[in-house]
Image: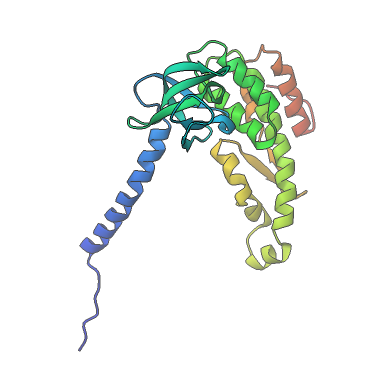
Length: 249
C-alpha cells in the first residue's frame, strides 16, 4: 500500500522559516535605502530626472545607475565642470560616483529647503505631492513646513478628483454588484490609491457621490503645529469647505 506523505510540524516550520529568510534581503535593502552610507554628509535625491550616477563629473561619462527619488546618499566631495557642480556621492559602502548637485538636497545645507520648495511649486500632480512630502521628512525644523503642508493638502485634494474619475472608469458596476461586497470596499481597495498611501496620504470615500475626498490631515497639522503661520487661515478655509460649514480648531 502506498504511503501518503504528510509533512510534519517540523517541516512546516522549516518551510515557514525559509520563506522569512527569503524576505530578509528585500527588507534589508529597503532599510539601507532609508539610511545614508557612512563617509560623507547626508543628502536625498529629490529630482530623479538629474539623478544619473556617473563614473566621472561630466554628463557624457559612463552611467553607473540611476537613482530614484527619495534615495539617501552620502556627499564626499564636489567639483565644478562646464558650469555645472557635481557631487562625489556614496550610494553604498562599495558603490559611488558623480551626481549633478541639483538632483539632491542636503538637510545640513542652509537654503536647500527653500530650493526644494521652489521645485515643489514647479512640479505637478503626483510629483508635487511626493516632493512636498520629501521636504517635510528631510527638513523637520524648517520654517517652510506650513507652506509645504498647504501644497501637499491641495495636491491631495486635486488627486482625489483625478482618482475618482479613474476609479469610475475602471471599476465595473456589474462586476461590483456580482462580487457582493459594498461599493465602498471596491473603491477603497482600488490600486490607484496605493502610491498615495505609501506617502501617508489618506482618502475617504463618499458613497452618496461615489467619490474620494482627501481626509485633510495636512491642513489639520498646520493648525495643530503652526497655528500662527499665514497658511493657517487657508487651512481653516480648506477644512470648512470640506465640511460644508465653519471650522473651529
